[in-house]
Amino acid sequence: MERDLPDRDQAIPDIVIRRLPIYRRGLRHLLDEGRLTISSNDLADEIGVTAAQIRRDLSYFGRFGKQGKGYDVPTLVDAVQQILKIDRRWDVALVGFGHLGQAIADYRGFEPSSFRISAIFDRSPNRIGQVSAHGVEVQAEGDIATLVRRAGIRMGIVAVPADQAQEVTDLLLEGGIEAILNYAPVTLRVPEGVWVREIDPISLMQSMTFYLDADDPPGRSGSIADVAGA
Amino acid sequence: MERDLPDRDQAIPDIVIRRLPIYRRGLRHLLDEGRLTISSNDLADEIGVTAAQIRRDLSYFGRFGKQGKGYDVPTLVDAVQQILKIDRRWDVALVGFGHLGQAIADYRGFEPSSFRISAIFDRSPNRIGQVSAHGVEVQAEGDIATLVRRAGIRMGIVAVPADQAQEVTDLLLEGGIEAILNYAPVTLRVPEGVWVREIDPISLMQSMTFYLDADDPPGRSGSIADVAGA
Image 1: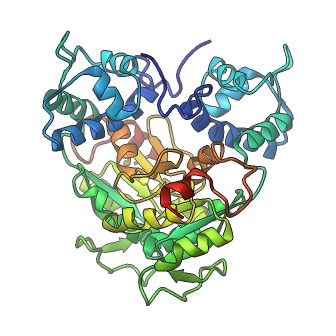
Image 2 (image 1 turned 135 degrees about the vertical axis):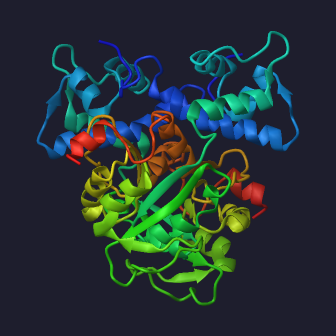
């Protein structure tokens, strides 16, 4: 039996959805450079996938390119943002205000995005009552379910130690959270219909060592040394 | 022209390499549960891809499954680890010892991995000389190139603010670093032959909002509330 998992949306493979943010970033970059139209080959180069891949992926959502004219960049940016539903503001609850949580609360990548960390929670009495750089006060972990539900927050970020991650996840779920970004190195258990994506630095690093020449003696690094003029 | 980018290794698409760490994690999980053999369908379910995908991906590296017997788990784990070259220790230089850098230095996911943060750098005089939880002393950013080269370190992690990320990247490159995990929300410029992977929380969150029902009024969350018994 052939299928793409997870299959909550039979029609559109999740891998396509995961590529759309990358398309959007490339398109925004083109817009910032003042490009209003782009050929499918140039767009493919900008994004780092094939033109055929882009066509296939976008075909799930309608017809975007014009024969012989390529893509209209502003139209395609708007379309992708609408598809991803990031043409609106999404409030996010951050759990954990240790080093990692504070780094996330300060993360400059959120500023131009549609995501706002509008609630922060921690279990440590020392941290409860602290205020983030963006003016959000840290509240008690025990109040997660009540406060998240009251504020209608539907996305959460788990930034607590691994052994507390499931516990705070359960509180987020109790509050009605439907999507979780997990920084803890554990697999969270969530019910059907709730989405989890993981920040997984180890997998990313493992996917780079493949390319490193394992037989290089330490201290020698070939072409890079040449590039750096060392 | 059809090709997978980046095409530094023509034979094996990068997307296949990026999936191998996920296969490895699933296989390790099976091993922890005492499973020594597994059918290709059960392995597919465990990992969350199709059996055909696994077969295609693994076919780049040899023949692993046995007709009618499925996969031998320990053999496949070993093979994937060898392919990824994570059957050995890799030293890593971490740049940035603010909140994010401290969180990375403490990250428990590194412990069972083949990666060791064996050098830490920062530009702040207050942080230079501090010692991480794992006993690594923070050194001056200006010494990156010399110390990284001397130690033969080939992988780096960039955990500095966005506006300093390129500068420290250039120092890492000068020291001979060949692969970088970038936490800063900027695209790093590196020469051909150097690999960069990004920690990109925004893209991951954008790939979840697609699935959220945008018309839900705040405070109501359907099946999840039912699951949580709220």
